[in-house]
Length: 173
Image: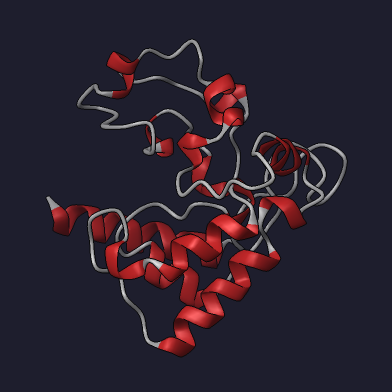
């Protein structure tokens, strides 16, 4: 099972890099619409997609990404430690493209939903996420076909392209 996840993640990362990364920005031009703007970093794609889907930097503020990257030795129950140079490069990339640095509408709303002194480690811990998913029951997230609320791709078919639009949602049974 872990091998399948790894192969799928690496394949997804390759597709993202070949296509130029995350989405085209959506409404209002590059980066300003609901769809996340195109962002790419080879090391971020390779390292992060080796274990899970690539979470767009615009889904969390800089202080959250700094906290995530500072705790890679205990990254959600796994040791995801990196060499210092790679860790620094990915941290810089995430910070520069974070929700609080983006002019993307969705990223701005995510950032505004987080208290000034807070640094959530999970996108699912933001008020934005809980408000957008308030009609989805805990039982739905626990379905075998979904697994958890952090598996964006299970329902959002365009998640790895930064597209979380309602037209791209299909909740599996």
